[in-house]
Length: 183
Image 1: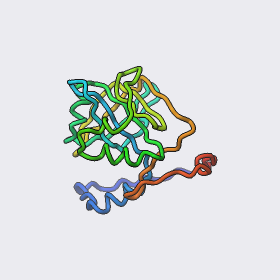
Image 2 (image 1 turned 90 degrees about the vertical axis):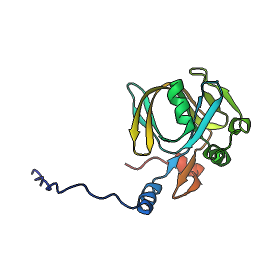
Image 3 (image 1 turned 45 degrees about the vertical axis):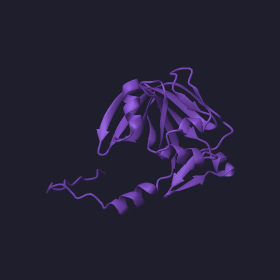
Image 4 (image 1 turned 180 degrees about the vertical axis):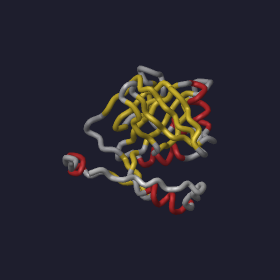
């Protein structure tokens, strides 16, 4: 039995949902929290909080971050051509808030070290990190999508991630992290 596909007539562009509906819908997807870091032209570390992050490809190994177009860190990333993605652990709420702020002394308040593959800033106490070469940027509304080719990385198996859901921080329970995923 084959399903019949009916084509809908195209009558114009549909209107977008309102901002409140968009935020409610998108906020219902729990996400991890990352800090995207780089070095500016003077070698000073720069970074921002980002929850819009995902895997894109295995061959080559690519990931994606979405960064606000007005971000000064975005300018530094595109100029440098390299960045790191630091995936925060469950105790990282203060770090997330710090890097979401306009504070100028962010890196003076956290422990970090240069990555061995890229030299980009890696934060201590993370669940995992990925060091990236900037493969491509894609303008997308008021953001820019960064496609990064992963050139280095590491994980801490005994740490749980910090998550964000419906406008607030959340933590996974240890027991939930060990349950098998239903088929």
